[in-house]
Image: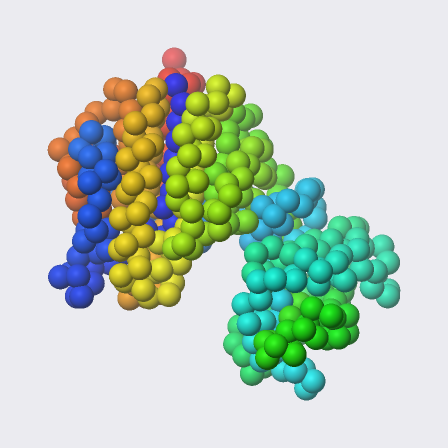
Length: 411
């Protein structure tokens, strides 16, 4: 018996006047999700606990049965692992932005015109950089997608108790990184990062890629702003924790990183770039192919586009994307010998354009589930389901028990 948890990122929402006070999920035409609700057991889920605005990272950690308050040190380590860096326990990792700085030190574009090409060449100028006074620290730098990158610091005497350099808004200089405690490790790390930001500008302002961008009227990626710091945690592998060989199919480096740090095999999907234009056909085929692979007992799947539409406040795009995802659900439902869990990692309401603490619907299909009377998959219909209201940390316990792989507690 296999298990799949499919998470439609940011699918949950709030009622919208424009949709007759329905949510996008309620308003969308989703015959496959509704059929799944009809033949499964339903409920609503708080990814972490009621009212907590979960990030995609902390919610996935919780849903996989790890305590996010212990495991989550920051986003950086998961981003680093997700783009292929072999991080080790104790590394200090950051997600970064390629940004545009003017000659006065002011950030004029935090995303460097949403640069798409040439970041690999830019990253080579920074990777393995040795900073004067910090020769004992290994600097590992790699581009991610678009304007994003990752910085890893490896060495002794470092700390993740430091602030970000990202000013969050254009028209301001990079923030001075400061230590967040009184330790010499935090002071050393803050000093290193401030030097790193300045040196990145010196290295990149005349880089050939940036010269071409300037000639084309595009903003250069001439400075790197580290943020989202975290120390790489020591996480027991998913296989050790549950006795399941696991695969992860995800679009974003963040979720891939969570899968990798948990010891899952990453299944790369061509064209699965995240966002509303992602290649859902290729994602579907990868799910079907991996489900047939006898090596795997479990799959974690994350599909991202609904979250992007929510952040952008694009109601119609979110509704349309949910309808597209419904076709994926229809294919996965047909896999035999499977417990299939469908849910979201958080709500990203159109009206808020950010994550909220609203619970999300969840449904489980599979042999011997106690099918309830729910026949629609959405935020309100799910409230009358047999699962009632659960937390993300309950999901793996429920799945393992349904798969008859749980240990008895007591005599």
